[in-house]
Length: 138
Length: 138
DNA sequence: CCGGATCCAGAACGATACTG
DNA sequence: CAGTATCGTTCTGGATCCGG
Image (cartoon, rainbow over all chains, first blue to last red; front, side, top):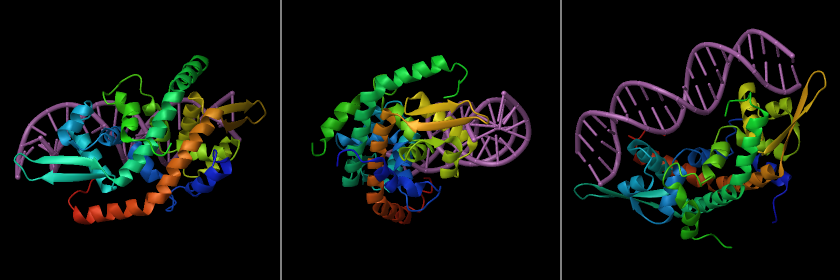
C-alpha cells in the first residue's frame, strides 16, 4: 500500500474536524498513549507480566498514585489484565492483552520514527529558537 | 516484517525506562501528537496548504490562541512551514514538510487502529464501569 | 504489597480584548 | 487577517499520609 496518499489520510480522519464528533475514536487512543506514563507501562509489560512494584521500579520516576491510575485506565480499555492473588500481603500482576500487544506494535513504530528524526527535530528546534528569540513559549 | 516481537519493541524503548534518559526521543513526538489539537492540524494540512483562518474554520472548536500555539510548535519541530505574504492585510499559509508528511502516515495508522478497536474498547469500558462502580476516576 | 484519600502546584486550555 | 496580551478556569500529576 506504499504510503497512503494525503486523501486517504483525511478520508479516515476528516470526521474529527468538527470537534466532538462521536464516530472518531483516535482521541481515545491519543488520550491513552499521549499521557506521561502509559507508553512506558505498555513497553515494560511488552517484556512480560509484571507486579505492581516491578513496574514502579522499572519506571522509577513514576509515583505510586500515577502508576495506579495508569494501569487502571489501561485495564479499563482492555489493554492490560490485572490479576489479584489473595495472598498476604496482597499480590497483583499486570499483563498485556492481545489488544494491548497490537497497540504496542504501533508504539514501536512511533518510537522508531522518533529515533530516526530525533536529531533533525532537535536541530530544527535549535534553529527556530535562534531565529525567533522572541517566541519563548514552548 | 510481520509484527515486531516484544523483545524488538523493548530493545527500542527500554532506554526510556529510567526517566529523563536523554537518548529517547519518543516523548518529543508524543508530547506533540498527544496534545488536543496537533493531530487535527496535521490532518487538515494533509489535504493541502491552508491559511490561518482556513485552519480555524476547519477545526472550529479551536481557539485562536491554541491554533497559534499549535502551529508554532509544529513549525518549531520542522513539521510545517509557515509562509508570510506581506500583503495588506497580512496573509499566512501553513503546509506540511516532508517530515510532517512522514508523521502523518503514522497518525493514519493510529487512526486506523482506533477505528478498528473503537467498539471493543467502548465495550470494555462499559463492562469495567459496571463491574467496578466504585472506580469513578478516569 | 498494593493501593485509597487528600491536598496542592503547575501546566494546559479557553474567553476576551486589543493590534500591525 | 493573523496574531498578541491578559486573565480565569480546568485538568494533570506529585507528595504525603493512611489502610486492608
